[in-house]
Image 1 (cartoon, rainbow, N blue to C red):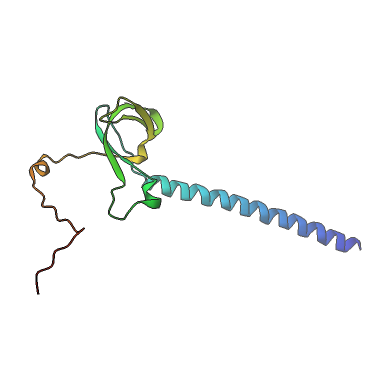
Image 2: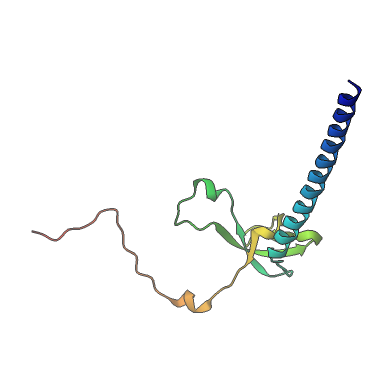
Length: 130
């Protein structure tokens, strides 16, 4: 009986060593994946007065596939540390804070403003006579 008790203690000690090694491997894996993920993130720097577009995450659930998920342009009024940005709408004086990852720079193209677009209504199609 004494020998069986010693073997059981050795098994428990070995189990604790294996558990500790698995815990250390898990920490090492998490550090590596965090480092890889952080290296792929591109930091966006915004300046006060810059025009930006805001990503509307609610459109992902119910929006149509041709509907744009970006609204704006908004004007950056303040840039906070750690990626927070305060923006203001063009027609309202109300400003609010958003995460910088939800913003992208607004690139206006003045040559597109002069383009005339032909509109075709598909509500009541007309068919040629037979």
